Image (cartoon, rainbow, N blue to C red; front, side, top):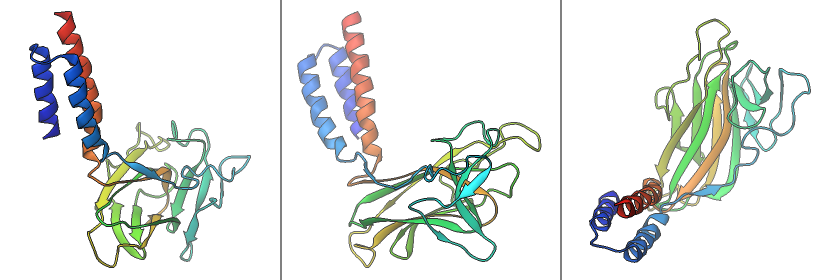
Length: 240
């Protein structure tokens, strides 16, 4: 609906049926409508697992600050400083989080709000020399999973080896999923917790983000669309 409105405004402007001042005023109104859907980030401590610094000699692991652990027998998890050739690049910083069958968890000190949209995003990968890619990523309200990302319910593309060969590094994929809180029920007011786990060894995580918005996150995209259309319309109008 908003996209159609912006397209109509642009067409009127380029045909000369509307001046730039009117178009700008209408755009401002559309911006107010769409801005309600813009995401507000919820703070995730040590979101890229840079603290503490593991090492100085790579590869080495250490406990990840601000992240609690769930550790069944034989499992390990924490922050990981990899060798330079473990990946071609890392989404953010020098270290990543890892799970060898357990989980890293963080209670965010934020509670579920009725009708709010929550969008969880996590960069995921695996290390070529260890295990298989079997992520278990959850957003919990209290003890109840409200959003789950796994191979059976992925939040993006599966990770793949960048080139052939036993030691070829895997790429990183940004997995994202949105959950809308209900209008009422026991889940409202429950604490939000992020769970980063794996059903095997070794799944890796980086740059964890959680956003909230009062409307679906999609309308916020129209701010960018509108800006591009206005710029294109002005150029078409005055090039003639």
